[in-house]
Length: 253
Image (cartoon, rainbow, N blue to C red; front, side, top):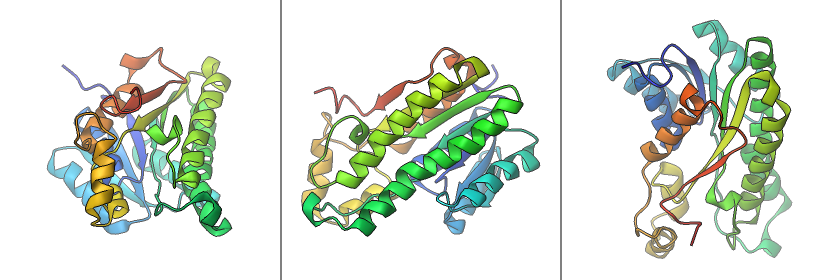
């Protein structure tokens, strides 16, 4: 039985660690060639090595997803390296320390919006331009449970992740007749390096994050990756504009 994305070419941003790395590995396992994109060259190259060790095909591309020219070059690099672009996971993002809204600086706000929302717009724009001219494709953006409900202390993050869902729905409608499907995955609290950085060794924050999940345990990156790759596959051919919660029933409570 062939893989879900056999013969396809996938691009994953933020693929140097966490959910992005896991998605790159599942894409490769399911038969795709993967352009691993990240600003962390060491992490990105390690992901490429992991893909290779598992028998897959991947290459690394250094990118700052907040820079329009670099995003354009990233899409071009995927096509130059592998001949086409069929799937994209716009996953790169950051988090910030919890801060009361009235104490958030304009700089902190602007940084979060640039990395977690504007970058998704830039990636979508360049990916869609290519896909419009080459028969379509599938794009998945990483939002969050925080794209659906509020979290005190995380106003910039919540705003950016809500924005990702609006962008996803609008793009899905615009490209519905062009063979481009656009969806979002909304992770619950997941055990990634970014989450560990957010917890920062504080048992109280760790307990609070685990308490958001009914099972009491953080999710695993590969659990998100399976959903992303399925949404990019032809098995999800009529799924577009969807904001899929992959969170162990956290937000539905």
